[in-house]
Length: 98
Image (cartoon, rainbow, N blue to C red):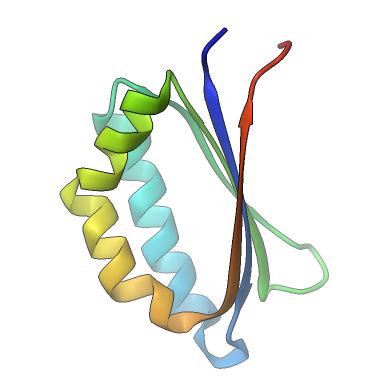
C-alpha cells in the first residue's frame, strides 16, 4: 500500500464557522468528485464544539496529493478559507492496514 493519509486538525474562529464550513465542504466535494487520486475526503466536526474540525483525506499516493494541491478548488480554499482559522495542524501517514 502506498496510500497517503492526511489528517488535519483545525480550530475555526468562533465568528467564522459557517463561512469556513462552506469553503471546506466545497473543497472536499470537488476533490472527491473530480480527482481520481483522491480516495476519501471526510470533514468531521466536533459534536460539542463547532469550532473544532478534523479533515481525513486519503490519496492514492504522493503524486495524487501533489495534484490535489494544484487544483483550482484547492487554491480557492486556500485563498478563502484559511483566513477563518485560529490554527491548523497537519499530519501525514501511510496506510498500514485497511
